[in-house]
Image (cartoon, rainbow, N blue to C red; front, side):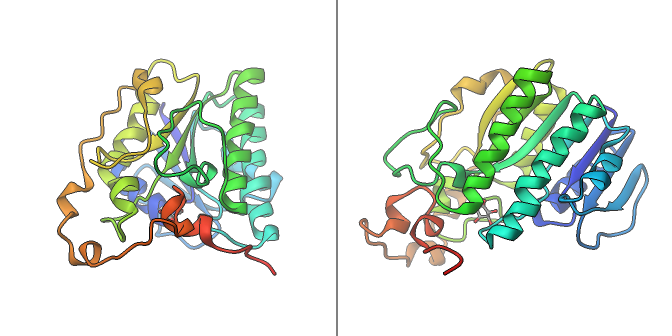
Length: 264
Ligand code: 15L
């Protein structure tokens, strides 16, 4: 894996990966629709709208692997989701097929399964139960990835990312938190392993409270090193009072599950 494309490089997790992957490859091409910092050594910076098929075709040319972290990362209007996440993921896989890219890391989300209750332990075979149109778009992306593996052999690890922030922002994130270090390690494992096939991985650190089971993708060799337990005494978390019947508490997707439809 010597030439890698990172989409969404201007976003929160894109910036984390840009920093942690610096110097790992012969070249990393960084793309986003938004402005990015100028290219450093062995970096290329290309501004690109993922909904623009021709631009994405050019973007992917010459890359061995794609880290697809671009697109809308929360709920939005259908038009926005359609362009960034639905057309975007299709354009990425079509370009991967045409340019013979072998491997993709797809930044999916826990919101593809957010309507499962918190008492339910999920593994890679769990039924998709999206909690938002954003979650639907991530489920669509996973299916596109599955299809392009079955038909064209393009390997993908779809990472159902929990909550990847500096630290948990609420009680729910004690279960869903993914440290930046664990995220970066996971991406590196996927790029380095001999064979990925089609994999669904839950992106959470080694938290005490957990709803997800990665046993089926143990062959990737990823062992999260961090745990949200270190934040258990944070007053922001200890002062939170929750009603167990509140949909935001009942379902894994939290506020995404309890929120109404984005557009009236
Ligand atoms: C996501 O998919 C979002 O991108 C992020 O902003 C968080 O809301 C996260 O899920 C979460 O579930 O905490």
